[in-house]
Image (cartoon, rainbow, N blue to C red; front, side, top):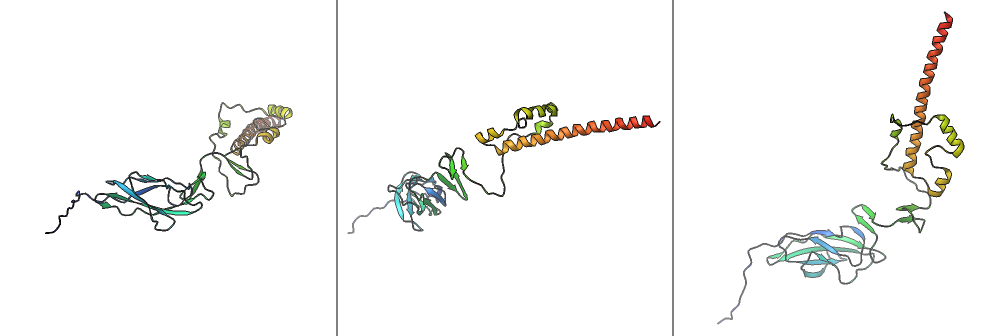
Length: 241
């Protein structure tokens, strides 16, 4: 007489679908040596197997993880490319492998302050200095910057000069201001620029305002000249009679 064996039937369900990876993003660089891998939950999954390593495809790093995140217990190597993917599990089987993603750890160890996303790289805090160890702006460059074009976004512009309520300074007042201050009204002085620098967007708007004021003065001068020419013409006509 044979021995008695037992078995359990399946639950009638199906294996979970493939996992969608979340972070670190594929191809990212400067990652922590103890990165937090995360993925989106797979429908019906009860646990996950994590595959992580320098080979492609990577080897199993952890099995039957109940959550949707995993942090290696041992620090990874600095400046190294790693590959990873996830397999979801339940009582009916395992999901297809997720896509294999890669990331590169920071070369100096720890967490890089730079983050990459696709073709973009960004810095989320502090100032960046080039040629200076004490940057006072988001980007401080001690030296010359070479570029083909600079686009300055500015919320204010100088069209207010053409507002009918705008008071156009008479040239006599402008002359008096220049004699007293040695620079144009509303334009920073040489001392101000040496002390605080100059905002490119702000100075462009101010310079355009001066051009617009000059244009208004020329229009006014043209009108006055036209009136004078008409008066002279009338006088010449009267004298010739």
